[in-house]
Image (cartoon, rainbow, N blue to C red; front, side, top):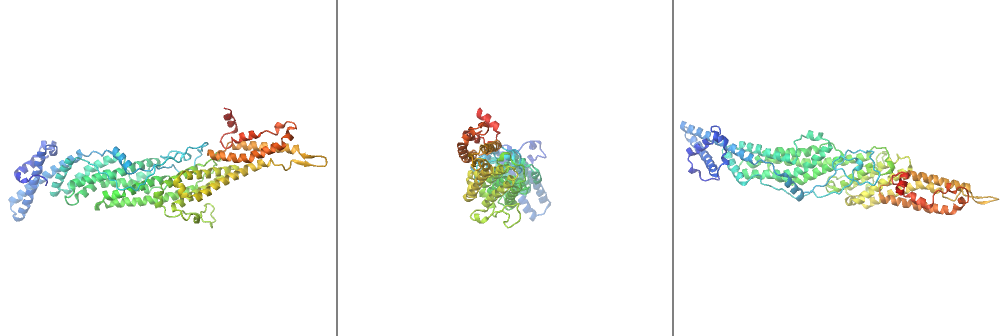
Length: 630
């Protein structure tokens, strides 16, 4: 006992002090607290308790040697005094704890922990995997949905702050109460435990400190939700709660639980019967299980693709916290907490693998059949490539979790609903990289199917060109994704959209250019030879009609990428303008020498060049005319 010698206090004086502070017998003792008084009074009471306890020990020894009635009466009297003293100390213990039971200040500590130890990814969450008719008609400034609320066509890339989740231990203990109060609590606990009141001491401590932990939980936004409650939440609400949970989990493990453990050690360490560990678990076991149950409920919920990145955030957070959890919950009685945390990490890893598989299946089976107007980029393409870019951002985690190749179709199978992939071309690439390539393969397979819903073959080719070009640009725009996909496959994709552009030109312009051939215009006979004006007029009329139709139709089509749009116009111009200039140069005089030449030569070379500027803008020709006149 860390107090002056008790010999200075007689048994009678000690008993008098104990009885004077009996709250059941004195109104003054009921309203006053010893440890709120001066230090001398506190020390005097503790000396009295020590004296009574010593008397009890000596009486017990005497009781063994002498069983007289007087000794029994004395023993009973001392026991009564001890009971009164322990009841009083329990009240004092509770009062000190309650006085210092305020929740921790979370704001500054949360900011400090986030900035110093772990900067989480700005991770995306996606709304339900479906395709809407909310199509964009101009250059899109893709913006990823952070709360799952935007339409699929609006989900896109954004700058992402990436950092490793593999941090060293970052426990930050704080003082939960002043040192003098801790000394007082230890003095009380020491006497209660030595008198056999261990359980009462632990129960009082645990009930008060658990209330303080619960209050801190509330400030951190940790709600008391059952696993069933969590699984019934809509994804939008759950998504927000996951973000709060990640911040709260770091705070709870590294500050709150660690500080509670330290406080228990300061008060109970060395008092025997592992009192510090018992009080710590009495305080935090329930809150710790509540905290972990949230992550566990997420790990066993429906494996929807839009949840993948939040699942990975949870996985990485727990994995990063695991060394700290092992350090804070190191005792034997805390083994269940350590085991649960490890098991949840495994469940989250399995859930992430399952969600990637679900995503691949969803991309392959996405059923929309309504063609996007103008052959522009399909919402599915935007969704998938934004999703794929995020997968590459999580390559450190997913690279460890994804260890097997994707399940693809067989080239020897009669199943035409699934594409095939030759892995021999990608022997050097990781399983995760193969999954990314596979996702792009099945996306293209789906898009090829969607292109068949266009009645105009030229528009079908333009649709494929737009979408594959978008895929290429997304890969080039993400260093992580480009590294994983590899330049060889990127070259194949580039060749594919260029081939689609060539196929578009062939489907659209071969017929138009056919009108500008010389064959069929010359006549020869016994009386005359030269150009048939009738055939020439018909040829100009056919060209005019075909170009007008192409112009009218394809001005409404859309190539969102400015550079691609300009490149295709130049390519068309290089085909059309020289051919038309040459044809016009050879045959203009034959038309102009006849009647109403304006009915046949409707376009100058400059007119065609101007008209080509209307192509692929997504506007009607009349709107282009108004825009040029403004």
